[in-house]
Image 1: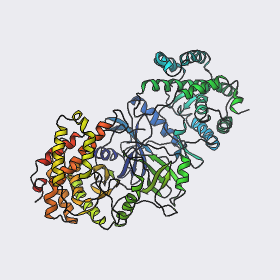
Image 2: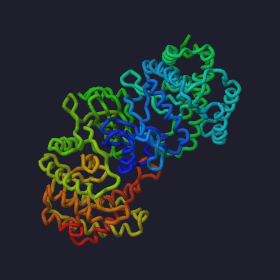
Image 3: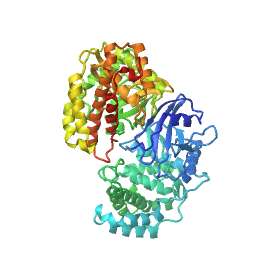
Image 4: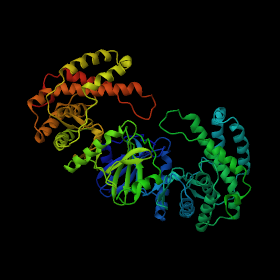
Length: 320
Length: 320
């Protein structure tokens, strides 16, 4: 929730003049997104999102992200499309930062997840996986199993500030995940951050997916595992197997899951919970109180991880 | 720069159903405004601003502010108009706060003030003063001369933290202003916070005025004095008499200024500088470092006040 970079009207005018989008009539900073600065840009021709990439984004990876959005949109997926300037380029500089304009996507993210939302999410995620299949670029997931131990080492000395047994729990779980992480499951393009605030709805219908800045090449079912955690738990911590069933069955109608993928879901869900437990713990310990960014509770993912440790098979996610 | 209240999609849907504005297709928190929470609301029918009034706004004064905007818009002034619900009311509740939807105004505020902006501001301000002449409600300006001493008393014990001679300077100046403040100048509806971020332009043309939540009944020329401070100084502290001349002459074409009003300008400008010196000093001393709201430097207004103390007549503001 922040505008890190103020764009002056002069700079904006010069920037917009590189595009065939008409005269700018409004440009308002959006209080969403913790990584980048986003403006809702209105021109005579329509609405756009102007993004300035702040320091947490590696500029060398931007061609991957923008190329991916362009590819997915061209395949018919409802997601933002980078707008190219008169020089054919989508990526340029504004206020000393890499910046791009993408198409505006109607819809709102849901603060209260319903069964219907989960039923819509499944097929949309599967369509995204299918649409990404022939995207030619790849990007390693630096927040998958190989990236967890360095994060653990960084939080380890202060882990007890979050919970007394956190260090021990991560220690044991990490050893298990490292030795059991699947190596033969289908791999492809995954979103890797498909939380409710990145999925838009108009009424009950899913209208689009945004924020591909964690997208990478990884186990496809790992994306599903992230969503099991992000969409199928209630605020009180209860796992809602009906939501999981609707999501998984919706997914399977568009992209069938092999038995190997289904059997791996509990393990992948533990890994997905570990990933967010680690990054949230890191942010929790390294974000000063009173900072502009609201810290997210790592313990939410500690509890989700504990839940999946007790799952003995995919049937407990509501499917046959 | 903040969204203080998160509106859920359910609450928003129920709220919007009270209006004839069509289905909501997007709602994004805007990172502008330090007093209230603002959303850019898009429906099938167009764009609107949804405002939730936070604790610094007195709910009892909202009918004045909303009534004023409605009045000014009806007079042809380019400003937001409150949208009435099916029950004929513009003001209702959302998330436990007073809330209203107003029309969306195209344009952007200018980060770099040009001579042309000042030339446009003058007649727009004068038109606003004329349009407000027959508005039937009144509201005292609690931040005019009678309100300054209580503010001074509040900051006095810690004034030296800002500048060693600040207490003495305000003490002397306040005594002077209290004994010389004009009592016979024309009074009417003033905006009282007509800073550049409240005035929109499209290209070089003024497209509208927003944020009437400090509007009140006070000396009309005091509004001009606020603008002399807010629009006619350069970043290095230099007073730009050409900007002042263009603003004042533009104003006088729409609403002539009496000789008494012109002669009072230096005093009114000292008063306007005092008002913002006091409120900024108060906020400076009472806003914790690292808070969500960026503190504004009170010393900017200390220097502006010093400048006007040296002005001997309106000629120094560039006019004859």
